[in-house]
Image (cartoon, rainbow, N blue to C red; front, side, top):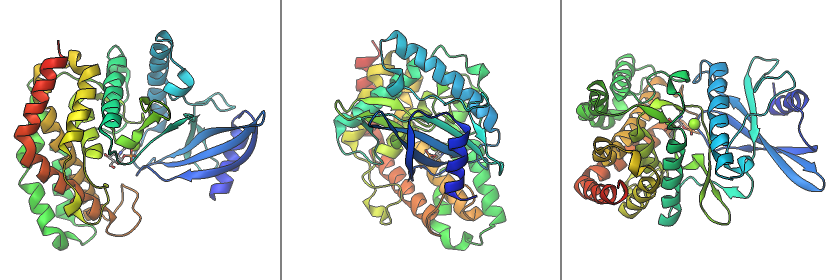
Length: 372
Ligand code: GN1
Ligand code: MG
Protein backbone atom coordinates (compact mmCIF):
# COMPACT_ATOMS: atom_id res chain seq x y z
CA UNK A 1 0.00 0.00 0.00
CA UNK A 2 1.17 3.55 -0.65
CA UNK A 3 1.34 6.20 2.07
CA UNK A 4 -1.69 7.94 0.55
CA UNK A 5 -3.67 4.69 0.77
CA UNK A 6 -2.62 4.19 4.38
CA UNK A 7 -3.74 7.69 5.28
CA UNK A 8 -7.02 7.16 3.47
CA UNK A 9 -7.72 4.02 5.46
CA UNK A 10 -6.78 5.80 8.73
CA UNK A 11 -9.19 8.62 7.89
CA UNK A 12 -11.93 6.08 7.28
CA UNK A 13 -11.19 4.16 10.50
CA UNK A 14 -11.25 7.04 12.99
CA UNK A 15 -13.61 9.89 13.66
CA UNK A 16 -11.37 12.94 13.51
CA UNK A 17 -12.60 16.43 14.33
CA UNK A 18 -12.59 18.80 11.36
CA UNK A 19 -11.93 18.53 7.63
CA UNK A 20 -8.81 16.73 6.52
CA UNK A 21 -6.40 19.00 4.62
CA UNK A 22 -3.23 16.93 4.25
CA UNK A 23 -0.38 15.08 5.92
CA UNK A 24 3.36 15.34 6.37
CA UNK A 25 5.92 12.77 7.42
CA UNK A 26 7.90 13.19 10.65
CA UNK A 27 11.28 11.62 10.10
CA UNK A 28 12.65 11.62 13.67
CA UNK A 29 12.83 8.14 15.21
CA UNK A 30 14.67 5.06 14.03
CA UNK A 31 11.91 2.53 14.52
CA UNK A 32 8.30 3.52 13.75
CA UNK A 33 6.97 5.57 10.80
CA UNK A 34 5.21 8.74 11.86
CA UNK A 35 2.88 11.17 10.10
CA UNK A 36 1.15 14.38 11.13
CA UNK A 37 -2.41 14.61 9.83
CA UNK A 38 -3.77 18.10 9.34
CA UNK A 39 -7.39 19.15 9.70
CA UNK A 40 -9.29 22.38 9.61
CA UNK A 41 -11.70 22.93 12.46
CA UNK A 42 -13.67 26.18 12.91
CA UNK A 43 -11.13 28.07 10.85
CA UNK A 44 -8.18 26.72 12.85
CA UNK A 45 -5.62 24.03 12.14
CA UNK A 46 -5.80 20.87 14.18
CA UNK A 47 -3.36 18.00 13.93
CA UNK A 48 -3.14 14.38 14.98
CA UNK A 49 -0.29 11.92 14.81
CA UNK A 50 -0.64 8.63 12.94
CA UNK A 51 2.06 6.07 13.44
CA UNK A 52 2.88 2.69 11.96
CA UNK A 53 4.33 0.48 14.67
CA UNK A 54 7.37 -1.47 13.57
CA UNK A 55 6.28 -5.02 14.32
CA UNK A 56 9.70 -6.38 13.45
CA UNK A 57 10.89 -4.59 16.61
CA UNK A 58 7.67 -4.70 18.66
CA UNK A 59 6.46 -8.25 18.18
CA UNK A 60 3.39 -7.90 20.41
CA UNK A 61 1.78 -4.57 19.42
CA UNK A 62 -1.60 -5.27 21.03
CA UNK A 63 0.13 -5.72 24.40
CA UNK A 64 2.23 -2.64 23.68
CA UNK A 65 -0.95 -0.61 23.20
CA UNK A 66 -2.43 -2.04 26.38
CA UNK A 67 0.66 -0.74 28.21
CA UNK A 68 0.34 2.62 26.53
CA UNK A 69 -3.34 3.03 27.41
CA UNK A 70 -2.77 2.08 31.06
CA UNK A 71 0.32 4.25 31.44
CA UNK A 72 -1.23 7.30 29.76
CA UNK A 73 -4.41 6.95 31.85
CA UNK A 74 -2.28 6.90 34.97
CA UNK A 75 -0.28 9.94 33.86
CA UNK A 76 -3.42 11.85 32.85
CA UNK A 77 -4.93 11.24 36.28
CA UNK A 78 -1.84 12.72 37.96
CA UNK A 79 -1.85 15.70 35.58
CA UNK A 80 -5.53 16.31 36.28
CA UNK A 81 -4.93 16.22 40.04
CA UNK A 82 -2.14 18.80 39.57
CA UNK A 83 -4.53 21.03 37.63
CA UNK A 84 -2.56 20.45 34.40
CA UNK A 85 -3.72 20.30 30.79
CA UNK A 86 -4.07 16.63 29.82
CA UNK A 87 -4.34 17.50 26.11
CA UNK A 88 -0.84 18.99 26.09
CA UNK A 89 0.96 17.23 28.92
CA UNK A 90 0.14 13.63 28.11
CA UNK A 91 -0.23 11.47 25.06
CA UNK A 92 -3.33 9.40 24.58
CA UNK A 93 -4.27 6.87 21.96
CA UNK A 94 -7.33 7.80 19.90
CA UNK A 95 -10.03 5.17 19.82
CA UNK A 96 -10.86 3.88 16.34
CA UNK A 97 -14.43 3.40 15.15
CA UNK A 98 -14.23 -0.28 16.10
CA UNK A 99 -13.50 0.70 19.71
CA UNK A 100 -9.82 -0.26 19.71
CA UNK A 101 -6.89 2.07 20.52
CA UNK A 102 -5.17 1.00 17.28
CA UNK A 103 -6.02 0.05 13.73
CA UNK A 104 -4.87 -3.01 11.83
CA UNK A 105 -4.68 -2.06 8.14
CA UNK A 106 -6.08 -4.20 5.37
CA UNK A 107 -2.48 -5.21 4.56
CA UNK A 108 -1.94 -6.34 8.18
CA UNK A 109 0.28 -3.43 9.30
CA UNK A 110 -0.33 -2.04 12.77
CA UNK A 111 -1.18 1.63 13.28
CA UNK A 112 -2.22 3.98 16.06
CA UNK A 113 -3.21 7.62 16.28
CA UNK A 114 -2.37 9.95 19.15
CA UNK A 115 -2.98 13.57 20.07
CA UNK A 116 -0.66 16.24 18.69
CA UNK A 117 1.04 18.36 21.35
CA UNK A 118 0.39 21.96 20.41
CA UNK A 119 2.63 25.03 20.88
CA UNK A 120 5.62 22.86 21.64
CA UNK A 121 8.86 21.80 20.00
CA UNK A 122 11.29 18.90 20.15
CA UNK A 123 14.99 18.84 19.31
CA UNK A 124 17.56 16.25 18.28
CA UNK A 125 20.42 18.06 20.02
CA UNK A 126 20.45 20.61 22.82
CA UNK A 127 22.86 23.44 23.40
CA UNK A 128 21.11 25.49 26.06
CA UNK A 129 21.85 24.15 29.58
CA UNK A 130 18.58 25.59 30.92
CA UNK A 131 16.56 23.61 28.37
CA UNK A 132 18.51 20.47 29.22
CA UNK A 133 17.91 21.12 32.93
CA UNK A 134 14.21 21.26 32.06
CA UNK A 135 14.51 17.95 30.22
CA UNK A 136 16.06 16.35 33.31
CA UNK A 137 13.33 17.73 35.54
CA UNK A 138 10.68 16.38 33.13
CA UNK A 139 12.14 12.86 32.98
CA UNK A 140 12.57 12.82 36.77
CA UNK A 141 8.96 13.92 37.11
CA UNK A 142 7.84 11.25 34.65
CA UNK A 143 9.41 8.56 36.84
CA UNK A 144 7.88 10.06 39.99
CA UNK A 145 4.42 10.06 38.40
CA UNK A 146 4.82 6.36 37.64
CA UNK A 147 6.22 5.46 41.06
CA UNK A 148 2.84 4.04 42.12
CA UNK A 149 2.04 2.40 38.77
CA UNK A 150 1.78 -1.40 39.15
CA UNK A 151 4.86 -2.44 37.17
CA UNK A 152 3.93 -6.12 37.26
CA UNK A 153 0.96 -5.37 34.97
CA UNK A 154 3.22 -4.12 32.17
CA UNK A 155 4.04 -6.39 29.25
CA UNK A 156 7.70 -6.60 28.31
CA UNK A 157 7.46 -5.07 24.82
CA UNK A 158 11.09 -5.86 24.03
CA UNK A 159 12.57 -8.58 26.26
CA UNK A 160 15.95 -7.75 27.86
CA UNK A 161 15.87 -4.29 26.31
CA UNK A 162 18.62 -2.84 28.51
CA UNK A 163 20.11 -6.12 29.65
CA UNK A 164 23.64 -5.21 28.64
CA UNK A 165 24.98 -8.69 29.43
CA UNK A 166 22.52 -10.07 26.90
CA UNK A 167 23.29 -7.23 24.47
CA UNK A 168 26.95 -8.19 24.70
CA UNK A 169 26.06 -11.81 23.88
CA UNK A 170 23.94 -10.66 20.95
CA UNK A 171 26.91 -8.69 19.70
CA UNK A 172 29.15 -11.78 19.93
CA UNK A 173 26.54 -13.80 18.03
CA UNK A 174 26.38 -11.15 15.28
CA UNK A 175 30.16 -11.18 15.11
CA UNK A 176 30.19 -14.94 14.83
CA UNK A 177 27.62 -15.13 12.04
CA UNK A 178 28.85 -11.98 10.25
CA UNK A 179 25.72 -11.94 8.09
CA UNK A 180 26.69 -8.74 6.31
CA UNK A 181 30.25 -9.86 5.62
CA UNK A 182 31.41 -6.53 7.14
CA UNK A 183 33.32 -7.92 10.11
CA UNK A 184 36.83 -7.33 8.77
CA UNK A 185 36.13 -3.67 8.08
CA UNK A 186 35.27 -2.84 11.71
CA UNK A 187 38.13 -4.39 13.67
CA UNK A 188 38.73 -1.32 15.87
CA UNK A 189 35.08 -1.04 16.82
CA UNK A 190 34.92 -4.76 17.63
CA UNK A 191 37.98 -4.41 19.84
CA UNK A 192 36.41 -1.41 21.55
CA UNK A 193 33.42 -3.53 22.55
CA UNK A 194 35.44 -6.56 23.63
CA UNK A 195 37.53 -4.38 25.98
CA UNK A 196 34.39 -3.27 27.83
CA UNK A 197 32.82 -6.62 28.67
CA UNK A 198 33.11 -5.89 32.37
CA UNK A 199 31.20 -2.63 32.05
CA UNK A 200 28.39 -4.48 30.33
CA UNK A 201 28.01 -6.71 33.40
CA UNK A 202 28.06 -4.15 36.18
CA UNK A 203 24.41 -3.05 36.48
CA UNK A 204 23.03 -6.48 35.68
CA UNK A 205 25.12 -7.89 38.53
CA UNK A 206 23.90 -5.17 40.90
CA UNK A 207 20.30 -6.01 39.98
CA UNK A 208 20.94 -9.70 40.61
CA UNK A 209 22.39 -8.86 44.02
CA UNK A 210 19.29 -6.79 44.80
CA UNK A 211 21.28 -3.59 45.14
CA UNK A 212 19.32 -1.50 42.65
CA UNK A 213 15.54 -0.96 42.80
CA UNK A 214 13.43 -1.93 39.81
CA UNK A 215 11.08 0.92 38.92
CA UNK A 216 8.69 1.73 36.11
CA UNK A 217 10.90 3.55 33.64
CA UNK A 218 10.67 4.99 30.13
CA UNK A 219 13.71 3.22 28.69
CA UNK A 220 14.04 5.40 25.59
CA UNK A 221 14.76 8.84 27.00
CA UNK A 222 16.32 10.09 23.80
CA UNK A 223 16.20 13.83 23.94
CA UNK A 224 13.88 14.11 20.95
CA UNK A 225 11.28 12.14 22.89
CA UNK A 226 10.38 15.21 24.90
CA UNK A 227 8.20 18.15 23.86
CA UNK A 228 9.17 21.55 25.26
CA UNK A 229 6.66 24.33 25.71
CA UNK A 230 7.19 27.09 23.12
CA UNK A 231 6.81 29.83 25.72
CA UNK A 232 8.43 28.52 28.88
CA UNK A 233 10.85 25.95 27.41
CA UNK A 234 9.73 23.59 30.18
CA UNK A 235 9.53 19.89 29.41
CA UNK A 236 5.84 19.56 28.67
CA UNK A 237 5.16 16.06 27.48
CA UNK A 238 7.14 12.83 27.20
CA UNK A 239 6.67 10.92 23.95
CA UNK A 240 7.33 7.41 22.74
CA UNK A 241 5.97 5.24 25.53
CA UNK A 242 6.56 1.97 23.68
CA UNK A 243 9.26 0.77 26.02
CA UNK A 244 7.77 1.86 29.36
CA UNK A 245 8.59 -1.24 31.37
CA UNK A 246 10.11 -2.21 34.69
CA UNK A 247 13.72 -1.00 34.58
CA UNK A 248 16.36 1.10 36.28
CA UNK A 249 16.31 4.84 36.83
CA UNK A 250 19.86 4.60 35.50
CA UNK A 251 18.67 3.54 32.05
CA UNK A 252 16.64 6.71 31.71
CA UNK A 253 19.33 8.96 33.11
CA UNK A 254 22.10 7.41 31.03
CA UNK A 255 20.27 7.51 27.73
CA UNK A 256 19.30 11.15 28.17
CA UNK A 257 22.94 12.09 28.73
CA UNK A 258 23.96 9.98 25.75
CA UNK A 259 21.51 11.66 23.44
CA UNK A 260 21.61 15.19 24.79
CA UNK A 261 24.97 15.99 26.36
CA UNK A 262 27.20 15.18 23.39
CA UNK A 263 28.70 17.87 21.20
CA UNK A 264 27.67 16.31 17.88
CA UNK A 265 24.68 14.63 16.29
CA UNK A 266 24.26 10.88 16.73
CA UNK A 267 25.10 10.43 13.07
CA UNK A 268 27.85 13.04 12.66
CA UNK A 269 30.27 11.60 10.12
CA UNK A 270 33.30 13.13 11.79
CA UNK A 271 33.31 11.24 15.09
CA UNK A 272 36.14 13.41 16.42
CA UNK A 273 33.52 16.15 16.87
CA UNK A 274 31.77 14.04 19.48
CA UNK A 275 32.73 14.93 23.06
CA UNK A 276 30.88 15.19 26.32
CA UNK A 277 29.70 18.68 27.21
CA UNK A 278 30.27 18.62 30.97
CA UNK A 279 28.20 21.74 31.53
CA UNK A 280 25.23 20.01 29.90
CA UNK A 281 25.84 16.91 32.02
CA UNK A 282 25.68 19.06 35.11
CA UNK A 283 22.54 20.87 33.98
CA UNK A 284 20.68 17.65 33.23
CA UNK A 285 21.79 16.02 36.47
CA UNK A 286 20.63 18.99 38.46
CA UNK A 287 17.26 19.05 36.68
CA UNK A 288 16.81 15.33 37.10
CA UNK A 289 17.73 15.33 40.78
CA UNK A 290 15.50 18.35 41.40
CA UNK A 291 12.50 16.10 40.73
CA UNK A 292 13.84 12.56 41.31
CA UNK A 293 16.62 13.14 43.85
CA UNK A 294 14.58 12.36 46.92
CA UNK A 295 13.46 8.99 45.59
CA UNK A 296 16.88 7.79 44.41
CA UNK A 297 18.92 5.49 46.63
CA UNK A 298 22.62 6.25 47.27
CA UNK A 299 23.51 3.23 45.12
CA UNK A 300 21.57 4.63 42.18
CA UNK A 301 23.16 8.06 42.65
CA UNK A 302 26.59 6.48 42.80
CA UNK A 303 26.02 4.91 39.39
CA UNK A 304 24.51 7.85 37.52
CA UNK A 305 27.71 8.94 35.80
CA UNK A 306 28.58 5.34 35.02
CA UNK A 307 25.13 4.85 33.48
CA UNK A 308 25.84 7.68 31.02
CA UNK A 309 28.84 5.74 29.85
CA UNK A 310 27.07 2.39 29.86
CA UNK A 311 23.98 3.49 27.96
CA UNK A 312 26.16 5.19 25.35
CA UNK A 313 28.21 2.04 25.07
CA UNK A 314 25.09 -0.09 24.80
CA UNK A 315 23.71 2.09 22.02
CA UNK A 316 26.99 2.05 20.08
CA UNK A 317 27.19 -1.72 20.50
CA UNK A 318 23.62 -2.06 19.20
CA UNK A 319 24.43 0.05 16.12
CA UNK A 320 27.50 -2.09 15.50
CA UNK A 321 25.53 -5.31 15.99
CA UNK A 322 22.97 -4.09 13.46
CA UNK A 323 25.75 -3.13 11.06
CA UNK A 324 27.16 -6.66 11.33
CA UNK A 325 23.67 -8.12 10.88
CA UNK A 326 23.15 -6.11 7.67
CA UNK A 327 20.97 -3.21 8.97
CA UNK A 328 17.88 -5.14 9.89
CA UNK A 329 16.78 -3.27 13.04
CA UNK A 330 17.30 0.52 12.86
CA UNK A 331 16.10 2.60 9.92
CA UNK A 332 19.16 3.66 7.94
CA UNK A 333 19.49 6.28 5.19
CA UNK A 334 22.70 4.95 3.64
CA UNK A 335 24.83 1.78 3.93
CA UNK A 336 27.32 3.08 6.53
CA UNK A 337 24.71 4.83 8.68
CA UNK A 338 24.83 2.36 11.57
CA UNK A 339 28.63 2.40 11.55
CA UNK A 340 28.70 6.20 11.61
CA UNK A 341 26.30 6.15 14.57
CA UNK A 342 28.37 3.50 16.33
CA UNK A 343 31.51 5.61 15.96
CA UNK A 344 29.96 8.74 17.47
CA UNK A 345 28.71 6.68 20.41
CA UNK A 346 32.12 5.15 21.03
CA UNK A 347 33.77 8.58 20.78
CA UNK A 348 31.36 9.77 23.45
CA UNK A 349 32.09 6.73 25.63
CA UNK A 350 35.79 7.55 25.43
CA UNK A 351 35.24 11.15 26.44
CA UNK A 352 32.95 10.17 29.31
CA UNK A 353 35.68 7.80 30.51
CA UNK A 354 38.15 10.69 30.50
CA UNK A 355 35.77 12.82 32.59
CA UNK A 356 34.51 10.06 34.89
CA UNK A 357 36.01 11.33 38.17
CA UNK A 358 34.78 14.85 37.52
CA UNK A 359 31.29 13.58 36.64
CA UNK A 360 31.12 11.49 39.80
CA UNK A 361 32.12 14.50 41.84
CA UNK A 362 29.49 16.76 40.23
CA UNK A 363 26.83 14.10 40.71
CA UNK A 364 27.67 13.39 44.35
CA UNK A 365 27.51 17.09 45.19
CA UNK A 366 24.15 17.55 43.50
CA UNK A 367 22.74 14.37 45.03
CA UNK A 368 23.82 15.64 48.43
CA UNK A 369 21.87 18.83 47.82
CA UNK A 370 18.71 17.38 46.26
CA UNK A 371 18.24 14.12 48.18
CA UNK A 372 17.34 15.82 51.44
C1 GN1 B 1 15.64 4.02 18.88
O1 GN1 B 1 12.76 5.06 18.17
P1 GN1 B 1 13.81 5.97 18.65
O2 GN1 B 1 14.52 6.62 17.58
O3 GN1 B 1 13.26 6.89 19.72
C2 GN1 B 1 15.74 2.86 19.85
C3 GN1 B 1 16.43 3.31 21.12
C4 GN1 B 1 17.83 3.83 20.76
C5 GN1 B 1 17.68 4.96 19.75
C6 GN1 B 1 19.03 5.43 19.28
C7 GN1 B 1 12.76 0.64 20.44
O4 GN1 B 1 14.85 5.04 19.46
O5 GN1 B 1 16.58 2.22 22.00
O6 GN1 B 1 18.48 4.31 21.92
O7 GN1 B 1 16.93 4.51 18.60
N1 GN1 B 1 14.41 2.35 20.16
C8 GN1 B 1 14.15 1.03 20.15
O8 GN1 B 1 18.90 6.61 18.60
O9 GN1 B 1 15.00 0.19 19.88
MG1 MG C 1 11.48 4.93 20.23
